[in-house]
Image (cartoon, rainbow, N blue to C red; front, side, top):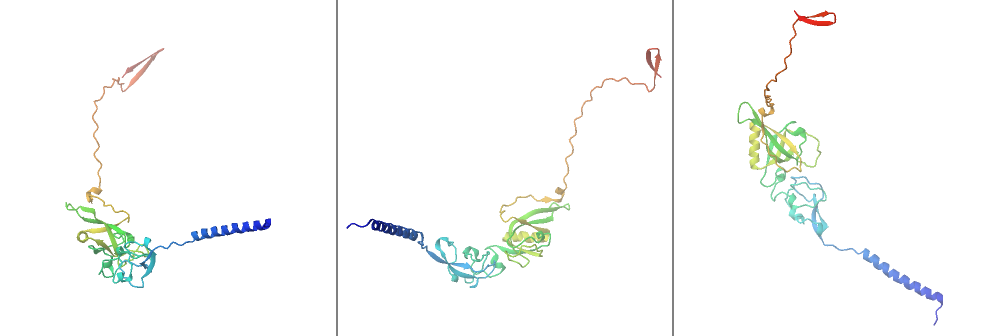
Length: 274
């Protein structure tokens, strides 16, 4: 049976349209396929949590995260946080890590800020010794001591005795994220080892101590010899004596008499001394 020419074109157009529809459907399906990734639970902070704070249920919640982005030391359940104290600041939405918690059994407060084996020691400060109030919790400071010189003679000795100490609090403020406006306080609490505590305690009673603020990224240790009072007054070295030169003989110059008379006779001139 012979089909009309117009019908053939209609059938061909229908086949082409059907093939195009199938290809477009496959393309869209491929692009919109959602890859299912494995997930797991992780505990995140629902508020900003300051160091030294005892965790409670209102501060944290359980969230579902892709396994591939969950840190290895993240807390997975609320039961693991029972009685735990935060040692390092945790921001809102951040997963709670074991490295940011104080050891099990640590009480809330300043003791929760201390690292194991370290002590908190408070020293007196003023506007000068406390860097004009620019020191804040979390900063690193060096300690300078001014003491009577062991050699005597009325001299004083100044030296950097401790370096890179962490500030736990200024006055009674332990907030590391509060306003950083200068505030002069009468005390600053530092985190020290037992040996550093002995040095700082003795220096504070034997002389004067002063804090020096250092850059947070500067972890190196200075090596200084200290300075005594006499070294503040520098003396210039004595000038080198010039070698004496043998005077060179000078041509003899005829000394003129104190009074000389010039005699003129015609075209001739002559002089005579009196």
